[in-house]
Length: 178
Length: 105
Image 1 (spheres, each protein chain N blue to C red):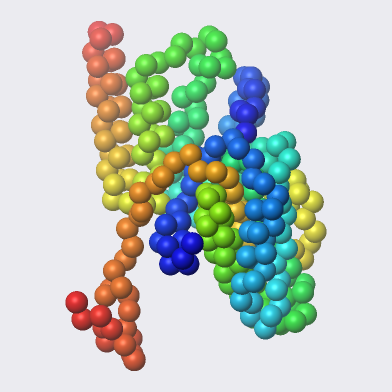
Image 2 (image 1 turned 90 degrees about the vertical axis):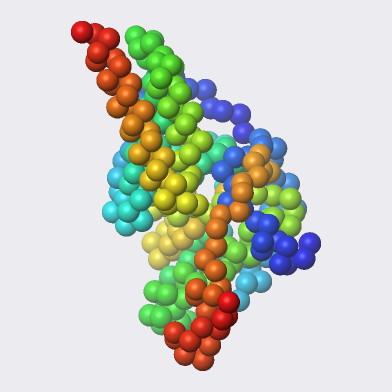
């Protein structure tokens, strides 16, 4: 699949088929994640693949933004200690978030190209998810990626026009005149 | 995934977890997630008669649940439409309230 086709076609899916996600596709999604760019090549990410139904159900319940019964979720965490050791305060406080976000975008596109649907969830209780998944101090749960075969085809949401948000050489000078 | 079998105790506990985690989340989340969580909680609450046999299923509320579940995600795609949906929902509730109140007289 063409990259731009995946970028344009991907949607946030909130209704899934019960069909399980094959392990080879899980691996493909994770490989896509780790090929994302990373500031100073710190690669602060850690992934928790959640497949166990009971664990998944607990995670769903403590995540008000988690919709649908997807058979899989991947929690993307950042290793804040590693980021601080290699990237200082900037690394720990900001770059980890950016790195995890770009890794997640790779995951979404790889999943979409493999026929899977995904949804990013940030609305989870950090305290509760730490407790349930036994995440150690120094590691921060950043984003939860819900994965499964889609059971809906949402319409594309609107996007702000490029004319409104793009400038040329200086802020305020429109890049696109029309 | 097969839906986990539910009973009343579990329903109540799950709803409580949803409300508690939502309350904490609302401190930092976008302000429109407040109404979104409330309306989502309402949708879940309307399921109560399935678990509490002393409460009859209310066709009006069942209809409102269908509307809520169909429209609630407008919060992430079209904020203005989400606000209109909430306004319309409240109007429907007001009309039903009026109808029920006048019926009782």
